[in-house]
Length: 605
Ligand code: NDP
Image 1 (cartoon, rainbow, N blue to C red):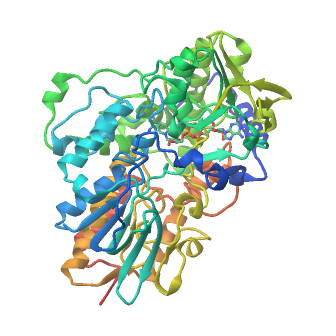
Image 2: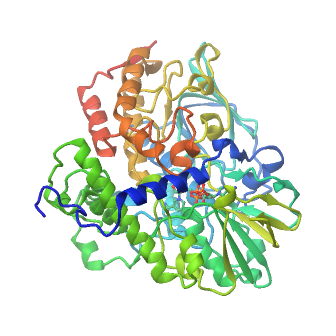
Image 3: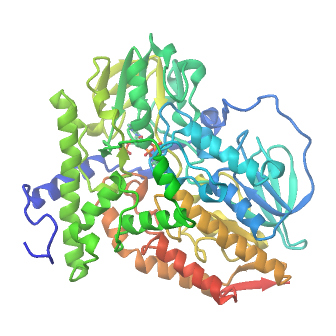
């Protein structure tokens, strides 16, 4: 084998057979109703999202009708970073509005047992270097992450500007006053010069539209609102109240992978209803090494984040600082030559190598199932048959062994494209009714569904323009942050900018950029700032033309939220991503800022 063709040339499998197997497994799961198979948590299902087990139910305060310079919507890491970076840019009159009773966002709500960030904590947790702290372990659990968000809140003075337990109900641009009117469920009508939307991609849970779902007479909840009053225990497990309970969990994504081991350990019976198995890789958590901590030098966190992003994007790299199962995936996908920065001869050769390496990687994942799960039929059903990045990879060392417990049953629902029916007493799959006391929905979030579903409230710009309608055929932004007709409005998100699995790093760069634009608009005494249609359309065209390969990859994938459940709707996650990746995107916006002329933005008086 020569150096130019390093990857998996020696194979013990037939790529054509695997390709065909992947196609069959995808086709088996494609549903005509696409993302409409999920129901929104509104009306009779609203209770699944609105219940806040952590906040004071009797909280009340008088409505506000005042004015501030900047309203930030969302108190998760993206909103906190927006506030911190706006403060650093000299903005002082800021208010942050958050639905929960504290900071934390996804880590406030998702306190299910075993909840842990699957990205290395030294890369993931924001502002570590600024605050001079380090997490206890390589992969932090939710309690430490939630504590960290509270620390950020304290150290950056964000508690003073926060309105908790408050949900925004509408955003309306008032052209006469050149202000946004922010209306909330506490009857506030706050005027704001600028609005930054920092809702987080996983802030709206969704339920599967399984026939009969409303008829179930037992207990049920969504993983993002874990009911410890019912299960007992806490985020570390010990769910002692389940000792005499038959429990069903629907879904086997990144969330279920983390909580199923605790349910298996404590429930009298556990039925795991699976439609598509996750790829479950090695975790190997370990305590933070004090010697390594002492060796860190200024700039270490950005350098580490960029190194991680380079590897996960297939860019050349000299050293793998994170060196975990995430980077191993990409090292495998790029092949051994990646460390030596060898470029494939042409795009076809690159694609061929990547596919072979992917087959190899997924063979390892499937072999891990065989090596761990004793029952052969269960092991077979737990094997994922798709390319690694068709779905979010997961990492856990306790999930697969859970299926060796006598009280745990895997119910494979792939033949019927999901659970068939819910009855007053339980769930039906493959014609069998499973009677249970409790159903836990681990069925995900409105991450990439239709924009209206993701946002949950109307946004009305100049001349009554509805943002949902304006974006109904796809996002129309400059750099993902701003849109014509919506002056002084900024969006921190995952579309038309550089996407990273390390979301907080991405949010921080977005927050810095938005803070820059707002402070520049202020310095220039502009009343409004928004992109021109020409600049916006040019950016959309850039994103779409670069995303061609992403689209082709995902079309061949098993359905999921990465590819709009296999539907054709415009605006899927991958099609709307700046394909060269987060580091390249950051270079684009850094150069844009360096030019100093707010190119493509219209400043209004
Ligand atoms: P997902 O959307 O990933 O998973 C939903 C699950 O529900 C899937 O397994 C899906 O099956 C299943 N499902 C949906 N409908 C049915 C049905 N009718 N019958 C049977 N099964 C059904 O949600 P998660 O909450 O697991 O994860 C969401 C995201 O949150 C992750 O992808 C990740 O980005 C993030 N996350 C991050 C973590 C971190 O550590 N950083 C930890 C946890 C979550 P199918 O696959 O067939 O659609």
